[in-house]
Length: 546
Image (cartoon, rainbow, N blue to C red; front, top):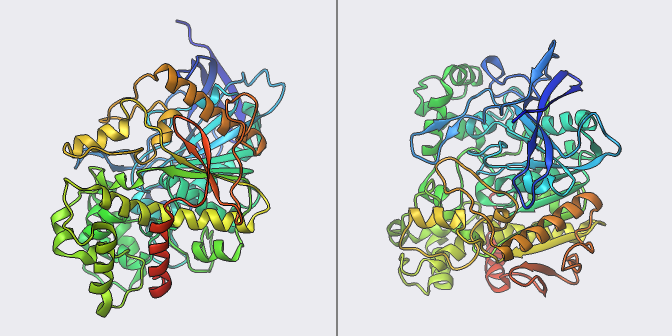
């Protein structure tokens, strides 16, 4: 078959892409431009630095192969993948760049993976279903783990390089997307799991104002205890010492010089072992995550506490879709997190959220209160694991997401559309992954990020590939993708093309959400109200550590 190539001139030079056929719900012709650099390689002296502007290139640069994702642990323990040279993005357009008659809306994807794994490449972020709805799709890679989020809490290494990478990729998109038929003034950011948390961090960052027009947050929140690093400098010291550093831990220059010389693969191997079981399993903390930076020189992405910024209403206000699956706590069954129920039974205090400010003299009392509420003080067991799954889901996602949803609805003049995903795809990839790791556990409900399996045909290495949709699932996928792309186009997910034109925004006086199940329906009230009131009571009594 003859491959048709196409060239596009962007600010830095000429790119050569290719024509492809989509593999979503239909099949259309589209044009891909892969592995486009958007900043200098973050290696050598640029390790731990904010992304630097890219130099122009001469001649034509092939954009035919994807760039490397950030160096990371694979799904198989000990398997290191990716490269430190990772600041690349992919652009997919349904329009021939030489035949642009009108500009289309743009979806800008922030991939998930706990800020530790994942990529914007096709295997994890396939664009097909979305571009079949006449929108452009942009998917960047960004730095992960310590390489993306280590902070010494000074101006030289302030932290949040991964978020600054996404900001730079968004700036590149706004500068260049017209050349691909995209509208730079109608960009919607979309993210699943930690990608959704990243979007919330963008909403509370002063850098984001005017950078995008809508936001779609799927299955995570910036208020998750494990997706905010409250002690970034001590964690950086801990990493250095685990790699062999024996110098003065107060000497920032010596620490930085040592960490710059360590092989990237060694850093990735060590970073996962720095957290306790409580942090790693129960609260989905994969060590290095965004942090609040100290004010000072250089590019600062996040200088204010996200919770306080949402509470005082000083966030970037845009139309938002936000929601989660029914069994979000299933994330604890990921092979990476290594659940140990025996350890929980030996030490109930593990159940106290790491960001709750409980005095040591009261930890036994609080732990007993949690055990009584979720387990009736009975031992946690694999035969009755769902109370623990509920607990993890409530602390990791539900409580924080309910907070940000209600605060955005209260303070923003724009609509906030809330949802709960209850439908599970046949041969669900995430369900198969969790049940392979824990064969005796059957998840009762929609696992973490289950709705994304109706939007992306995943082909992630070492994981089960997405299977074809049943006829009924294909209709559901079409409806869901139409809602989201309509929102991308207009800021409102409702349109005549779907069988459900009645997704109403949630408000402070009328909380409600759309149930994404076999029958789409609006449900009044707050999700998991009794369980979330339990945590509201505890946090009000003891307060937040961060």
